[in-house]
Image 1 (cartoon, rainbow, N blue to C red):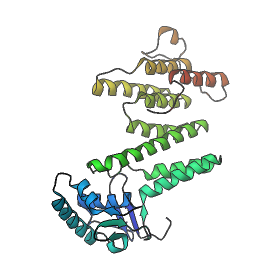
Image 2 (image 1 turned 90 degrees about the vertical axis):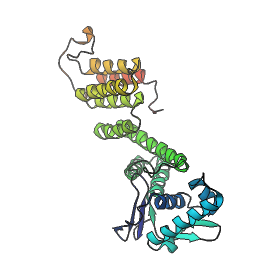
Image 3 (image 1 turned 120 degrees about the horizontal axis):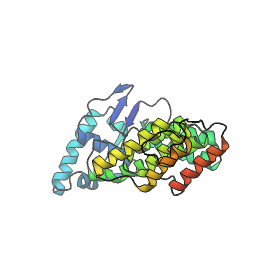
Image 4 (image 1 turned 120 degrees about the vertical axis):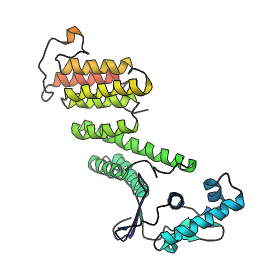
Length: 297
């Protein structure tokens, strides 16, 4: 897809349709949004009416479900500008028209993922980073986040998993480039998605240490402790506690209630720039504490 398209549809996060640069406000019914999303997500093949009706109204009789589908389709064709241009309708099936001019954020997201994979294979790091950032920008929240139908769950989970992979690769790439502020921003987004996954906290503390930011190491640790205690009635694992202590004591020595007495001998912090020994010690601490695996599982 490129410029010149007059219909733009966003399914990530809040549902949104724009036609000729103006929001389409008549698509405010959840059922209309869900049917449109179904056609878009299954755009590569005709969709049998019976199957759609069963997915949308599983507790209704076949006759009633098909009647419901006809009604929703009728209102969708009234609400969507130039609907007959975009929706192929016959007696037995419905299908989104791929030949029309339109842009779907989900499809654009997947295009950027494919381009990122190609750039990675060709060892084009600049293009790899660019495509990952473009994909990350498109993901504004879970797929059709206000839809609570079971049929959308597999696709929602698949796309969120893809997005998590984008964030993980950006964190790793930007850490290798020593662009720690940017890596931290993406690591924080990972933590928002998986707030009870300790590897996410360990990665964020690690990045704050590389960024010479003692205060945010402590803040991340305290956030982990508070969230686990308040919502799970648990304490962080010993692995996470040890990493916190090692990052603080080995690289940002000073008074801290969490640090053992022999770790309180120096009150002055030092930067990592130009200090190869300290850098290597920090990486060693990280590798020891995180099982040698940066993936969040």
